[in-house]
Image (cartoon, rainbow, N blue to C red):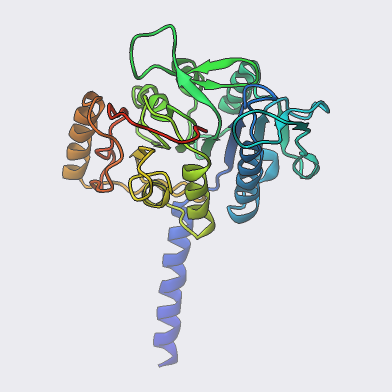
Length: 325
C-alpha cells in the first residue's frame, strides 16, 4: 500500500513539475495612463481610479512596482494639476500626490505624447518574449478632427493629444507573450480597430463605449477594477464583468456601450488557452465581419466564446445624456 501511495505521489509530483515547466518564468509590465488634458479638466476621479489601479496591479495582482509606469497629468510636478470638482466649472485646484507610488519605485511621468512613446519604446526592448503587457487608460477622449472616419479617435494627454494610429504604431513592435488593453475614456472603442489590424494573435482589448460615444463618470472603470478586486483574472471574464456591471452600460442607464475583443488571457500568468481548430476559424470569421459592421449597435451582453466577440466598435444611436468622463 505504501508503495502505491509513493508511486501516486511521485506521479503527482512529476505532473505538477511538468505543469510548472510549461509556464515559463515571465515578467508582467503595465502602463497606467490618464492625461486629464489640463488642470481644469483633470477631474478627481481620474486620480482616484489611476491610484486604485496602481494598487491593484502592484498589490492584488503582484506586479513588480518597478515594472508599472504611471503617466498622469503633469506627473510629479509640484504645481496644481487637478480640479476639485467632478463636473461643471472648476472652483479650485490641488496637486496629485504620488509619494506612495514613487516610494515603491514605480515611475511617475507626465502624460505627454513624448513620454508615452518613449515608455513604450523602452518596454519594447526591455520586455522578453515570455512577458506580458497591460495598458489601462481612463481619461478624456475625442474624435480625430482631421479625419472623416468615425473610427479615428484620440486620447487626451497633458495639454496635447495622442491619435489612435500613433498609439497602435507604438505598441506594434512589442514582441511578447500577451497584451491586454483596457480603455475607459470617451470614444474608446476607436482605439481598438488599429490594434486589431496589427500582426500577431496575442491581444485582448476592452472599452467603455463605442467610437462615436461618450463614457460617463467612472462607471466602466469602476466595474473593470471591481472585477479584478473580486478575483477575476481571465481577460474575457473581466470584459464581460465590466460590460454587465457598468452602471452606465446596457444593464444600467444604457448611456455607455462597452464591449471587448480578442484572446482569453490570464492577466497574471499570461496563459492563452489554444482554441479548437474550428473555433479558431469561426473566431477569425466573426472578427472579420464584426470589424466591418461598424454602424451596428455596440455592447450586447451576449457573446461567442471565441477570439473575437460580436461587440462592434461604433454605435450610431443618439440621445446620450449625462456627464461625460
